[in-house]
Each structure stands twice: as C-alpha cells, then as structure tokens.
Length: 609
Image 1 (cartoon, one colour):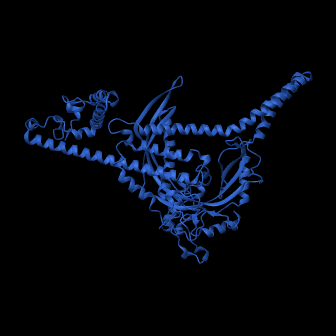
Image 2 (cartoon, helix red, strand yellow; image 1 turned 90 degrees about the vertical axis):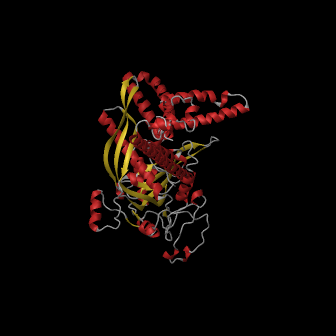
Image 3 (cartoon, rainbow, N blue to C red; image 1 turned 180 degrees about the vertical axis):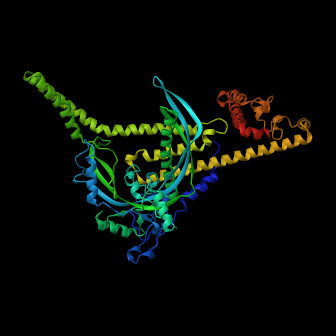
C-alpha cells in the first residue's frame, strides 16, 4: 500500500474484512452431499453452514456435525440451481482419453494409473457461477516500430480509442467460473464453452425469454437441479459412475469473488482485441502497456450452475525425489461430461516412441541409403557407424522427450513473469504530482490482473485447495482495500479542489468590491485562494530555503531545494546522538514539506491557507 495509508485505511480494513468473511450466504443444503475433506479446512471458512433437515424424511440426516466437518456453501438456495446432465458414460470418458492420445504422434499408446490398465475416474458435478453482462470499451497503449538492429522505437497513444460494445452471455468461456478451489483453473477450461447455452429467464414471460435466447445465439440447455442427490442418481442410472460415488462439490467461492475472476477474463479478452486493433490501425510491429476503460451495463445476470465432469488420474514417466529415488509421475486430466473435451495438466511424450523415431529416421534410413549408394564394400563401416549413431540417438531422444514438456512450461512461465513484472512496475511507478500511475484505474486493473495470473499459474503442479483458497481471499481483500484507498484519495483531492475554487471565487468577489489593491491593504500577499502566496503558514517554504519566492517558486525550484536540504540534513551525515536526532527530525519535516509543495493540488490548498 502507499505510504501514509495505514492509518487512513485501518477502519476500512476492518469493514472490508467483516464484509468479506463474516457474512456468508445461507445455503439450503439439506439434500446436498458434499465431497469435502474435514482435514483440509480454510481458517477463514470455519463457519457453520445452515442446513435444512425438513426437506428430507430420512432419519440419517439427523446426525450431529462437529465444527470441523461444517464448511460454508456460498451457492445460495439450491432450489434455484440449474445444471447440465451427463451426456457421456464412464466408458465414453475413457474413449475420449484414448482419442486424446492419438491426436499427436509422440503421445503414449495408452494411459495407465499405476498397475491399472486405464486411468482412474472420479465422476463429479462441479459448481460454477455463470454470468451474463454487456460492456463498452475504450483503449490506449504504446506501439512499437522496428528500427533495425534489434531496436524498437516506442510511441505512446494517449488518446482513448473506441473499442465498441461486446455482450458476454452465459455461453462465453469468460463468464463461466468454477466455484471450487480444489482444481487447477487451466484444467477446468475443458468444461467451458457454448454447450452451456443461455441462462433460463428470471421473472420473464415466454416472449421476452425467446428474445433473449435469439440475442445470445444459443439455446437453453440448462435444466433445474434443486435436488443434488437426485441429480447424482440420474447420472448413475445413465452410466456416468457407480451409485453413491458421484460427488457434488460445494460452492466454496463467493459470487462476488467469482465475478472478479470473470471480469478479469473479460479484460484479458478485450486487451487481446485492443492489441490487435492497435497493431492493425497503426501498422505497428509490437504493442505494450495496453490500458482499458470499461463501462459495465447495469443489466447483469448470474446463476449457480452444476457442470458434469470426469476427473482422470494417470501416471506417466518418472520423477526424482530429494534422495534421488524415482517414482511414477502423476498426472491429472479433466473430461467434460457433455462434449468429451479433454485437458491434461501437461502434454506427455512417450520416450519409447521418441527413441524409435530418432533411431529409424536419423540413423537407419540414412545408413540404408548410404549402403545402396556406396556399395556392399562399405557395409562394415556403415554398420559400425549405424550402431554408434543408434546409441547416441537413443540417449538424445530419451533426454529430449523428458525435457520437452518442462522446457515448454518454463517458456510460458518466463513470458508470464515478464508481463507480470511490467504490470507491477507500471502500477507502482510514481507519476509526479498526484501519483498519476497510482490513481490511474486502468493501470491498477492491469496490476490486479497480474496478481490473479500469479495466483492461477504459480506452482500449479502442486495445487493445494486450502492454500489457493486463502491466497485468493488475501488478494481479493487487498485489492478492495487499495481501491477504497484510491476512492478516498480522489474524494480528498476533489474536496481540496472545491476549497481552492471557493477561495478563488471569494478573492474575485473581494477584488470586484474593493479593487485590485485589497491584498496589499490587508497584507494578504499576491497569492490566490485567500492570499496565502505572501505567507508561509507552516514554514514549509522556509524549510526549503524558498522564503524569498514563496508561491512564485516553480516545481523545479522546490525539487532542487529539497534535494539540497535533504543531502545536508540526512542523519547519516551527522555524528553524535543529539546531532542525529536533530537531523532526523529536520529530515522528516523536509519530507513532509516536499510532499505538500511538490503536489500541485495540495500546494494550491496550502498557499490558500
């Protein structure tokens, strides 16, 4: 946070903390079966979930729940929930995984889970918050042109350009957010897409609902799912999994936090569009620092949606532990229960296929061609070279097959870290008077997006539900605190500007009434806003040695004077305890004086005192 903001935001921090973590949505969960682990509890979520036992006659529901087994559900009233039924059986899911292995030649022939001949499947309904919104966008950025020799000339486009309006309906991937922290966010993209369809209308007649469906160019595929136990039984009857083993995960994410993640996706999509527009319209070779000004339409809609999925676990390759022991590398894949889309944690490469291709294509085929071209008298030499080349190709291909996925992951991570570093540098940069970069909302939104990108991508191979849940809560909390601080800062500057305008108006009124000489007659000096230009109320000008200039001092005069006095009064340049204390006190006063006089708006208010 910015300097001097801890006191101003202490009460705001308390209000935000209470709003975020002490008022969960009540959930009618009497008919819900949760797939939760009592041993992994988020500390800020240990709050009882209101359960309604009157919805079931089964006496087994009247059991006692300890505080360790109760976890908050933010899904609201389950009677309003909708979802998609399973369209694939578990056999279809295995077939989809098999099909995935055949899409690239170097993937393994089949997937296994340890000694099992096929991956293990977990059938689940994953909770989602699905939104519908419409936005209007303006954009600007910095375009670059190739100057030769590896150099790029950058030109800032400071004027906002109109990016038009875009409607993101419920069939857009950007608006479909999984409300569970138990799974990697990139794997969940297998469940998202146009197959979700439009959201059912709320308090609309048939004609209005038909108009919305036509506008969104997608039909309504979602059905009501008020009873999750019944939904699990229906999926089991269809063949998605054994009875009693189809889990319905809880809504562990608040709707407001899900909207923040959805809005981040929308900004990413619009930032990509703006980048392409800047390149095309300005015929640029590169674009950076794209800023967005997004206006949200008041018409927004949200639904709690359950999407069917198969979570597949399999092993491929090996990983070395700290002691050097090798163990099978575990992988996770998500298969959509409707479309059969497959997303795997990383692209696996079959070492055997890679070695065979390297030996055959890189050694045997050239050796065979050489044998026919050179004749049988060189057969011995060719055979020896073939054997040596085969061994070398065998080793190199195996190392490449193991290293290729890691290298690709590291490349993507380097690009992400570079973008993240640039976003943080732009957001933390002090832009002169008024801290322009700090107060610029588009720059701060870019920093917020970089924070969520770090949360999503950092060490995602070791994804832990509890850690990600707490991390997301911290990010969300501090982003809201920073936003509230900026709003309070803007309100302060607006109030100061109003006081200055009011003081100027009074001065002009006095000048009309008593003439131009009223300042000299009253000893008010020559400054505006109450005549402060002739007085140094708190001695700030005197501290900087600018008593002779006062309000006539320029920003460069103030900056140079501050540097000179700060060098002279820095505590490290003085000896002795008393001298150091005196220098430290003066140095703090110099900093306070520069913060006021170095800011155009605050200086005008100070001169008007």
